[in-house]
Length: 200
Image 1 (spheres, rainbow, N blue to C red):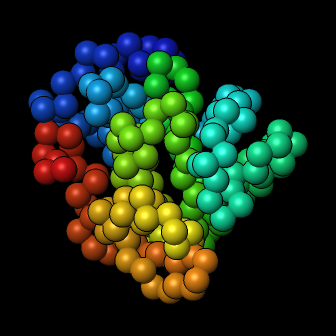
Image 2 (spheres, rainbow, N blue to C red; image 1 turned 180 degrees about the vertical axis):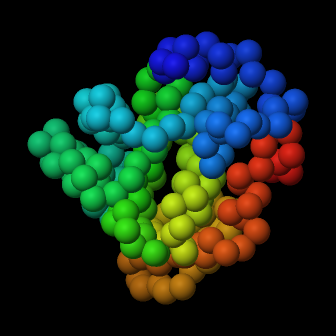
């Protein structure tokens, strides 16, 4: 099914009745943002490279944290090539446009690190939170033991989002804190429930 077809289907999706199917990924790819607009989260495909570069080119510089993402096209391309070659990636699509990205690297590490970014135009709509839930579901499905990230100490907004999902601070300096989410807890099971069964 094409992305356009998936988006059309999503416009008519009622999550309150969805019990999932055996063909569903670790978490249902369909979601609805805080404005009631449907969007999809799915694994990255090679055809997503150019649209993803364009998303990063359009990011407001205030979205940068700890030097990421890079802000020139050649550096964005090199960075994304590294992420897509050595890790696994998910993208969020709204109206057939990539508006979010999560990258996990290295792919074979039991406790990989990740980055997540959302297009400046659609922030504060729950897309980043859904990307985190998808990340957890896919990481658990891939048998990772935990997820780790470094976040700027002064980025309290991001810290709060991660804490709300269940990440805990395991190290801190003046400039950044290291956070970790073990995947043996209830969060991994909770995010993989069919939409009708979720309590979130």
